Image 1 (cartoon, rainbow, N blue to C red):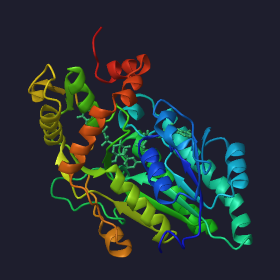
Image 2 (image 1 turned 45 degrees about the vertical axis):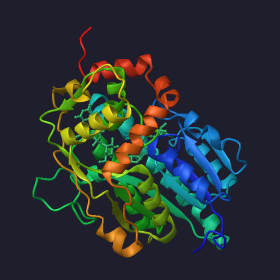
Image 3 (image 1 turned 180 degrees about the horizontal axis):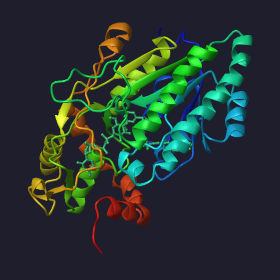
Length: 363
Ligand code: NAD
Ligand code: DAU
């Protein structure tokens, strides 16, 4: 369907001030300028209103600061904004933080998702009675499938769930609720399970931005364990295209795996980032950047390998990634070099406290 004869939507984007949610919000506002776009975000440490500041002038856009666990607020937004599409990104998303303190993960990822589903279930008849259809897209992760051995086949949509961290256990739980609401109540939910994203607006705690910023700051590049854990890297803008495709052509009740076809061992990824930094920021004091690589204590319960089999979304919906990891990392490094004003304020005293705790920096 071309954009011009597509009926406009009223979309609620939860977690739209976070990494993937903000990239998705920008994608949606550019591609569908006539849609009503409401972002609901609690602006936790990972949420950043500045990321969406350029959209504030658009009358079709609004950012609501609030919690997805607040049922009254969610009910009001669904009703007053006549929402037909929920794109649910809001979550506690960092594995290391889930090891230090799992409570917030249960609260937001499990109770928050349940609250949204309950609100949408009670609101949904308003849509159907008005002859409209609706959709609840639940954005999830490949981590729910557990860990692969080197020769195991990649995760498919039928791989049994086997979450290993408090983060992935909370996401698995929320996936089960989204699935159950389709089967029990006929609510049109779709689940996507995606591999590791990277790109602009990524909070500094995650591996890719952490390495870029530590090189700029001349700090050690911490590699957990032997550095041979493998992740399947996907450029965030390709992920946003995949979610757009799923919203428009996905089948309610289905799950779609989304991956980058880019399996890379952590140490190799870090060396690629070092080489890019040496090329694109040649005047940094510590060169070569690889000399900053430091092996540190492994993450507890560290999953060895993730890999996504994205055959279903390719054959059924026609989506596939367009950006190689080499191109995507180059664009990402260029973005961090050009956007110090975005990332510098994030390196707060609170963040430093978290950093020192995870990396056991002595004082
Ligand atoms: P993020 O941590 O960057 O952003 C999360 C956002 O949710 C933040 O803006 C935060 O303020 C908001 N939020 C947190 N708790 C909230 C609450 N209770 N109410 C309202 N808003 C709240 O996360 P991300 O990396 O952008 O991930 C987005 C989604 O995608 C998550 O559900 C995550 O599980 C999933 N996912 C992430 C990746 C990845 O590589 N980053 C891969 C696969 C799936
Ligand atoms: O697979 C999808 C998941 O990808 C998402 O569900 C999560 O929300 C997202 O955070 C990400 O999880 P990871 O744990 O894979 O991402 P992270 O960037 O934290 O780590 C990537 C790999 O790098 C992992 O094997 C751990 C390792 N690592 C990470 C950090 C922060 C290091 O070796 N050193 C580090 O300092």
